[in-house]
Length: 154
Image (tube, rainbow, N blue to C red; front, top):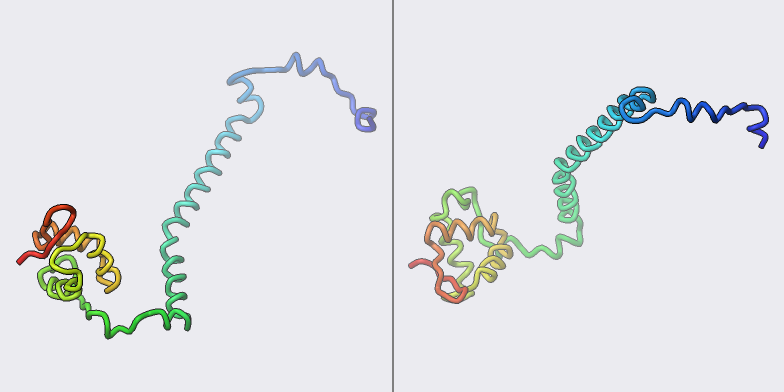
């Protein structure tokens, strides 16, 4: 009540001065507010896309920190139990890598499922297990034996 005592409000002005549509947008700075809102949204999306593009760096740092901790060194098996992979064991030169793949998958038997092969590849830290299996199938080095089983060529 104290506010209304010193302020004179003329409600007739609201009826007389009410505008709609484009006129209201022009009269009450609607274009500036729309532009400011669009700029805020675009800046927010740009910042979000930048953060997402750099997220892999944060994940790599967290994984490296886990590997560097003393508890993690106890859980990692010794490097001598795993086959030595060099730069030549990549997807561009599968023929040179197949001998290493044969020796590691010998414990699976003559026929095996792709899930078992993938598990062996992950266990031995072969690079890109999914891509390697696909490339082996495309090159004809991994042959379907029926009923979801596969075998090595030759």
